[in-house]
Image 1 (cartoon, rainbow, N blue to C red):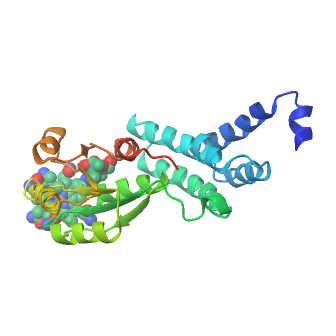
Image 2 (image 1 turned 90 degrees about the vertical axis):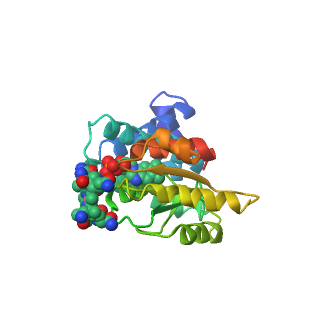
Image 3 (image 1 turned 60 degrees about the horizontal axis):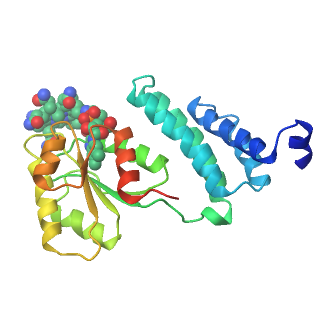
Amino acid sequence: MLVKYFYEGIGKDEYYMDILEKIAECILNMDVNNIEGLVKTAIEENINVEDIYEYGLNKGMIGTLDKFENKEYYLSEVIVCTDALNKGINLLKGTDKIKEKSKGVILMSVVEGDTHEIGKNIVKVMVEATGYKVIDLGVNRKSEDIIEEAIKNNVDIIGLSSMMTTTMENMKSVINRLNRLNLSKRPKVIIGGGPVSMDFAEEIGADGYSPNAPKAVKLIDKLIGGEI
Ligand code: B12
C-alpha cells in the first residue's frame, strides 16, 4: 500500500485523510455497499482506530445529524446512514483497541405516567450510533427505579423524556431525589419531549435540554467530553 500513495504522488497523511474522508462520505451518502471495504483498508493501513472513528465514522454521522436537523434528510434516511455507520463500527469492534470501549453510558427513560416512546427511541438510536452505550428503561418508569438503575450501571447521564404536560413534573422528582442522595459522582440529567423547554430545564435544575435528537447528541458530547 505504501506503493499506492507514492504512485499517486500524494503524501502518506494526505492518503490516509483521503480514506477517512471517503468513509465519512459513505455514511453521509447512505452508501452501505462500500463502507466495509474502506474501513477494512483503513485498518489494514494501520490508521489509528481512534482516527478512523473520529475523522471517518463520527464525522459522517455528525454530517448526517446536521442534515436531519436542517430537514434535508428524513428519519428513514438517517436510519440508512446509521446502517452504514454500524457496519463500520462492527469492523472496528473486531480490532483489539476498540473492544468494549464506548464514549460513555447514557440511561434513557420516559418518566412515570407517560407511555410516549417515539421521541425517546429516536434519541436512543442517534446517541447509540455516535458511540455511546445506552441503557433503555422504556416508558412509564418511577423516579426511584430510574435512579436505582442509574446508580447500579454507573451511568454518566440520565436522559428523561416526557410528551405530556401532566407527566413532565415527574422529571423534577427524579432530579430532587438524585440531589438528596449527595452522590460523589452524580450523573448529569438532561431532558426533552414535546412540552419541555430550556426554561423548564432551568427551573427544575436539569443539566441540559435539547429539542431534538441531533442536538441531544451534541449536548451529550459537550457534557461528558465525548472522546472515544
Ligand atoms: C403518537 C402519540 C401517541 C401514541 C404514542 C405511541 C408511542 N408508542 O409512543 C399513542 C396513541 C399511544 C398516544 C397515547 C396518548 N396520548 Co398521545 N400523542 C401522540 C402524538 C400524536 C405524537 C407524539 C410523538 O411521538 N411525537 C414524535 C416525536 C418524535 O416527537 P418529538 O417531540 O419531535 O421528539 C423529539 C424531541 O421531543 C426530543 N426528545 C424527546 N425525548 C427526549 C429526551 C431527551 C433526554 C432529549 C435530550 C430529547 C428528547 O428528541 C425527539 C427526537 O428528535 C402527540 C401529538 C403531537 N403531535 O405531538 C400526542 C400527545 C402527546 N398525546 C397526548 C395525549 C393526551 C395522549 C393520551 C393521554 C390520550 C388518551 N386519552 O389516551 C395517551 C397517553 C397515554 C400515556 N399515559 O402516555 C397529548 C398530550 C397533551 C398534554 N397533556 O400535554 C398530545 C400532545 C396530543 C394532544 N394535542 O392532545 N399518543
